[in-house]
Structure formats: C-alpha cells, structure tokens
Image 1 (cartoon, rainbow, N blue to C red):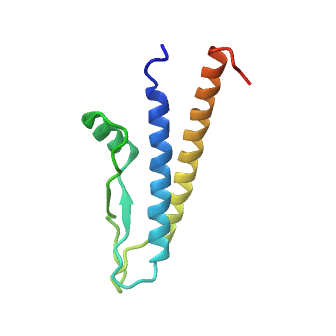
Image 2 (spheres, rainbow, N blue to C red; image 1 turned 180 degrees about the vertical axis):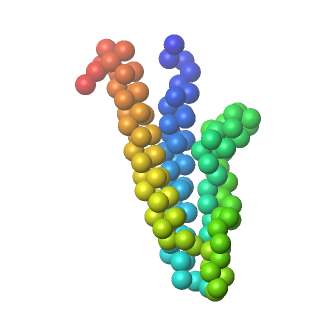
Length: 116
C-alpha cells in the first residue's frame, strides 16, 4: 500500500508549480514599467501533469511562455491586476499543496504507530 507514494510527488510538484508561478508574477510586476517588456506565464498545472505523466517523471521543469495579453502603447504587456490575481492564486495553491502533503505524512506516521 505504501510502496508507491505518488500523492506526495503530485503535491510536491504542485507546491513547486505555485512557487514558479509566484516567481514569474514577481518578475512581471518588477518590469511593469519597462517599455517593450513582454509578460511571461507558467503553463497550467494540468498541462504540466500531462507532460510529466508522458515523460514518466515529476522532476521535469515547468514551461514558461510569453503571456497572451494586450500590449500598452509603450509595448509592455504586463497587466498588474492580472499579476496580483495570479500571485494570490499561487499562494492558495501552495498552501493547499503543503496542507495535503503534511496531512499525508501525518497519516503515514499514524499508520506505522509513530503519530504525534
């Protein structure tokens, strides 16, 4: 039953995905006033999971692509409201991943008789 710990791998990858989203959003926000800067975005977690299952490894990198957002007259495509929303969404995704990961470990500790 405990020989295959895929749930821990999935939620670990979800936490890494959220951190990557946070990093990309922070970079976009930092360049919000740079003329000609093109905003980037991380592939969805669902797209990453599909690719990871095909490759057979959860340790693959996340794809970061140019965001499909309108550009301002100076050529910058960062939308601050969108970036703040993505940042908050990443925070929630990270918190959920860590909660499930922690609860899964607690369940394993209880199952082997070493509960808190």
